[in-house]
Length: 534
Ligand SMILES: *[C@@H]1O[C@H](CO)[C@@H](O)[C@H](O)[C@H]1NC(C)=O
Ligand SMILES: *[C@@H]1O[C@H](CO)[C@@H](O)[C@H](O)[C@H]1NC(C)=O
Image (cartoon, rainbow, N blue to C red; front, top):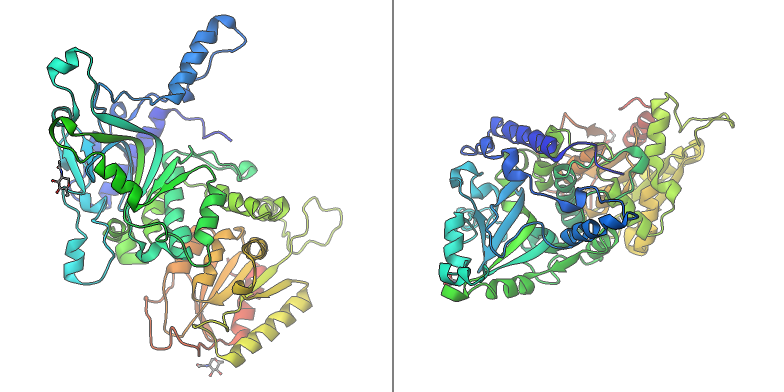
C-alpha cells in the first residue's frame, strides 16, 4: 500500500505541529519549532516523482535520467554542504537528514544557531553503560566530541578544497553514505536481550520510522512493508556479540524482518572514524543521507521514559501517536515479516484484522454458532509459559493448581490450551504458538517478550504474574502499545492500566515462591472473553 495521499509539504507541516506540541509539553527548553520551515526539509526525492511513460521513445532519456537520480544520492556533497535538518525528534530518537561524521564526532551543519535545536543531551550520550551514580550520570552526558554544530562555512574550511583548487574542479573531501541508516548508540548493557532489543529498541525504532514517513497501515495491507527501506544499522558501542542474545532471537528477528539490511558494529565504526581522523588537507567527513539516531540515556532524560514508564520506546511512540502517525496496525509489517519467515500460515497472521472486521459488524467471532456466518469462528487460545524450570518461578502447588484450572476452563469451553516451556521448543514452534495466542500468561520475565508476536484483538490479553507488591512496566507498557490488555497479578488480586502500582522489586520478586491464586486468573480470562473487561 501507498502512504496516505499527502504531499511532502503537508507531512512536514504536520510534523512542525508535532514539534511545537512537544515544546508545549516542555521536554526541552531552548527548542524552537520555527526552524522547521518546509523549505529546509523538502529535499527532492527523485524516485517519488512519477516516471515518464517508458513506451514513449522520446521519454527514454528522461526515464534513464530519473532512474539514475534514484540510484545516486539526491544531494550533492561533492561541491555543496547540504545543511542538516531534523525530520522528527523525541528524547532519544532523532531523525536527521544530511548528518556528517568525522573522527567520531557527529556534525550538524547549519547556518542556524544551535539553540534552534533540541539540547544535545536529548539527542545523544557518550554511549557508556548506565549506572545510577552521580559520576556515571555525568560521564554519560554528551559533549561537542559526540555532537557538534558547525556552519556551512566552517564545514567548507575543514572539508572543502581551497578556492584555488576549487577553481580547477577539486571536490569536497566529503563522502556519501547513501540511503537510510539507524545509529543505535547504546552499549551492550541491554542490547543482548530479546526484550530490550526487539520489544523495546526495535519497537521504538519502528514507531519512529513509520511515523516520520507517515506510513498509514490499513488493515487490508497490514503485512506490507511500505516504509522506506532501512539500508543499514550501526552499533558504534558494541561488538558482534553485543547485540546478540543467547537464545538467538535478536538475530533471527532482525534477519527475518529486514533481510536486506546490513549491520555494522564497533570495529566498522572505528574504520569510519579512522578514515576521517586526518587533519588539514587530509581532513575528511562522511555524509549520511538520512540517519535515525537512537540513544537510551537520552531517552531516559525525557519525561515519559525517565519519569513514567521507563521504556525508551515510549518516547518515540507517543511523539508519533500525538500527531496521529501510528495506525492500529503500525507494528504489523514487522510482526508479519517475522512470522512469515518462521512459516506461520497466513490465516493465523490475520487473526487481528479478521476479528476487528467482525467486531465492527457487532459480531462476536469467538461465540459464533451459525454455520452460514460470513465470519469464521475464531478459537480462544490460552498459552501459559511454564517457567518452573528456570530461576524466577511460582510456588509449585500454585503452578499445578493453575494448570489444572486452565485445563478445566479450556475443556469446558472448547479453548486451546498450550502449556509451554519455551526452552524445549524451536523458534518456529514458539512463534507459531504465540501468533495464535489470545491470552498469554506467565511470570514476569523475558518469556513474555513474545507478546510482540501476538495478534492484537479486542480480547487479546497478557496476564503477568508478579510477586505480590512487585511491579515493573516492561511488558505492561509494551502490551498496551501494541493493543493488548495487560493484567498484573498479585496472587488473588490484580492491577490494570490506568490503576497501576508503583514500580517495586520487593524481596521475593526474583524468587522461586511466587504465589498465584488460580481462580483469579480464570476469572480474568472469562471476563475478557465475555467482553466484560475491555
Ligand atoms: C580525532 O579524535 C581523537 C580522539 O578524540 C583526538 O585525539 C584527535 O586529536 C582527533 N583528530 C583530529 C584531527 O581532530
Ligand atoms: C493467595 O490467595 C489465596 C486466596 O485468597 C489465599 O488463601 C492465600 O493465602 C494467598 N497466598 C499468599 C501467599 O498470600
